Image (cartoon, rainbow over all chains, first blue to last red; front, side, top):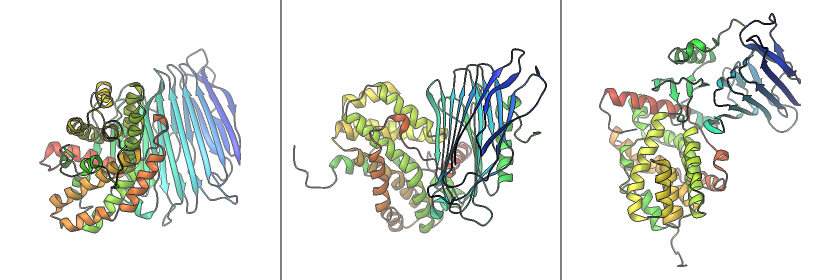
Length: 256
Length: 236
């Protein structure tokens, strides 16, 4: 299935953010949360997988634009399951987000589970204007319980005014590579959260299974390795608690 | 041009030599922390650690060494060096690993400049202040020593595992023969990593492939933290 969805968020003139343009394309369905007009706060949009996706052969694209000063919270509501399809070729999902001056995007999807024989490629590209802010999370579950994952390549690119802050490509590889302590250390779940908020942690923080890493060009990346998604979420929360922008970030655990 | 009868130039052998005075001996590439945690304690576990290290950190370093050798040989605009520097930084989220790469870059620069001086090498220093290790290796071979991108990648891939292997001898009292054999076992894979890196050598810096190794990022940060609190043998 090939589909292209898009979303634009702008300021409504009273300080609130509203969805101006929205085009869903199955299986990517965008559901804006209703709220009173003129209410302050971010525009909240839920990303709902309306068909079993991503399947082999799927090519899903989402383009998001956050206009000057607006704020968008884009979140998932359920884990996505990457599965092999009936047609040859892997699945691909690409999300590109442009944020104008003073704008903010928070992208908080639920975990993606890579099942056996899946061949999935996920790309996230975020381009920020000088004063824009972003917080994007990714949780990868390598196989359902007791299952070895199929193929996966995931890449996140974050730029501010065209300068690279983060280019993060991850490929779990085969069983031997996944088990190596020089690569993935046998973890089943990898979670990342990149935050570019203007205020960055001055020093890195680390524990054996997570680290909050200040990036060279600004922003920070939290990396978590965990045995399961629940633990990964807890570690992400621990890392957030020591981030200087924690008060301004939307809590990742609802309420939805 | 003189006919080369050997397969590796003297510059390649010198840069890969453990006795090259570039300061590489001070780094364990995350192995010291892995040993400290009990994750690596015998030759088999060392081999598995090196295998992972080669395909993640080693592959990324090889990509940048090949790209730097390619850029040095074609005399790119000096701005290219700051773009390569920023792209390597963006692919290295761990501050401890960025610092280790720049520290080894400085040491390799000083020793390498005496042996293979070039205008490009001086340009690299002027633009970046403290260049990353794979970029220095690439420029030394590409500008001063007439090496190729694949040679620069191969040297860098080799160094990504040879340093940790010799660190294992000191950290674990491992049989040096076994540690050496663990490196030698990676011959075909290291060649594959170098060949893949050479294929992307001419790409624009932002399009160069990157490979993250999250377990290594965590080891690097924890090593740095423990290094401040207790005595450690290695700087990284």
